[in-house]
Length: 369
Ligand SMILES: *Cc1c(COP(=O)(O)O)cnc(C)c1O
Image (tube, rainbow, N blue to C red; front, side, top):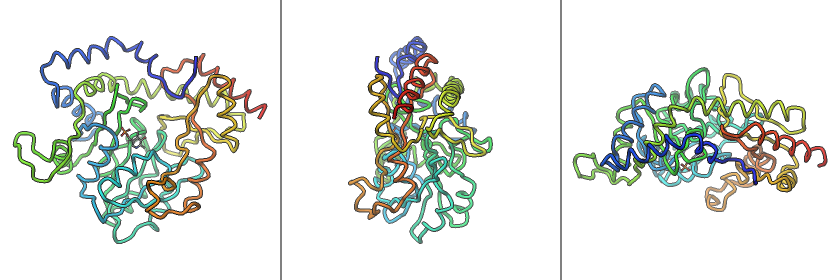
């Protein structure tokens, strides 16, 4: 059997009755779009964060896109973010007509180097978009201070950070709004696509509700500003309600897997994830680093272990963003990392036996490299 970085089938076996009951509940409810499932999930997900509003949307990319639009970010505006992220972060900025501006990441935890942000600001900067990458939070306080000082909005990309904390506070509660993805692999994952944007501001929540519903107030059938059709699906919402009740358990499971990797691989040449001071990591992915990354991945295939890289191509080097004019070499840490990082299997239902198989294969490969 091939071992992959992520698998949901073990979890589905454990939770099958609950998941199928969620499907049955929606099908039998008589309300298939924006019904009690979506409303219930929105209330529960907002409350889970101690926030007033959550607006469910169709995926994480659109949670960012609608979040930017709801905050008034659009053509002519610059949004400061990182290039070491999933492409959708940047695709969403591009989709609203704004221009992404990149800062480099830190060498130790691969997160936004906030000390570089001040130098990236121009008179067109409108928004700061930190990505809480891999499952831990960006050094958010100095970023919030900069936003206050320069009158900028902050949208957090929390697609990889459900349940992550910094200074005891949950990711998603720091900025003006925060975008989540419920893509199946995420820490809180649906059985298909889903996303949500959370906020404490009623005006932003109102904008989001119109933006996901063609640009209309749901009761009045009049478009004031054209929006999109970006609704969270009712079935996914009902499944997410069930899974939200287990989110703490999923996070604990991921931390146990991370701990076992540290015990099993801490004495090898592999650079393991570093948790920044003040952070509580949720290990969306378990990213390790080695200069001979490609050879390691290739040899592990001989053990039926197929690994991923998050991410092999920094966004600023992608052909689709060549028009932005970022030359190779402009973000040296991001570019170096892209050639050295890879991800070990990580999901809460990963069994200790399977994980030990991975650990011993990685040790074999490293010893004979
Ligand atoms: C997954 C992800 C997204 C996009 O979410 P989708 O639901 O796949 O659209 C955005 N940003 C980051 C950092 C992600 O990991």
